[in-house]
Image (cartoon, rainbow, N blue to C red):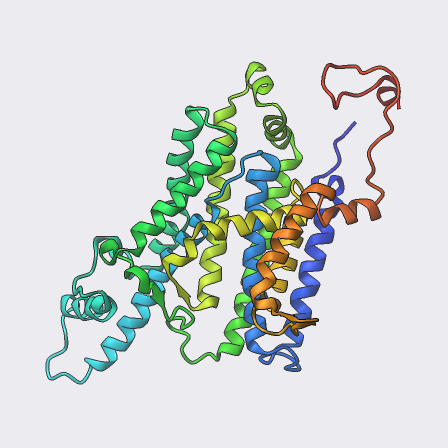
Length: 411
């Protein structure tokens, strides 16, 4: 019998893509650039950034929900993607400004003089005047787009190869990924790192060559780009976990030793997923920071990766759409509570300010979901769709806890 097509075997993919398309159209029609103006530009940017965070959550779910590795270093790849594209954005914008200011000189500047002036403009804030070696390709958008996925991918490949070949697992691997993130952040904080230290890269919302385009229109364009990339990466991730590859990585998550004894190259599967997730996360960061306008080493703080894990857990680990839902819902709620929009709660003798209490609520939500609703928000959709566990009847046909029973095998 012919196997059903991928989409028919995974109807949830069509639902997710349809909802994403409808959401994008509605926001566009209500934006200030292309619609009624009911949604301000600042909110369009928030929604665009939220889609980027949802993309990072999908990548996190591949690593944690399907492979079983709680990586607390995903936001390092997210920030690296932002730094790579931020180099071109800042260099090209500064070059345009410097070239315009030097255009009236009696003698036109040489390329070397122009580059030196650009370097002084960018790195004068950290007391440097030369362009660091790490900025050798900052003038080329094509090169920086390649580096955007190559640098995080290479870092994940090297780190994963060293960790997986040593068979580091569990909490020890989580600690190592967090240590990697912290080490990278501490290096970037140094002024001589080549990335302007604590100042980071700024002015990223000004896209070179599009200075004449209003921010209202640019925000919608970035929303379209974020939604398109999210849809494509979601399709890729769903296809990856739906076939034999997905079955193997889930088996590694559930019982790595048994999979290794069956002859599968466990380390190879781990390395592929870990590296792919890092590259997807880097793409999400490259789309996020031009909408945020600035990136600095504080973005690599280990707490950011912990937030990402919390989003995935609340949304529903092991379900790609659950990771998306968790990231979107929690990040929007976070913006609402921490932005001062939520009214204070007045209690007898005490006033609860949500700006101060939001992290407590988030942590409590994570604990409650872990204890009482391990399927997260996605479990609600499973229940509505009738996805309940089968009734266990008859003798087990295998030694494992999840083995089929006689009646299930005959059904």
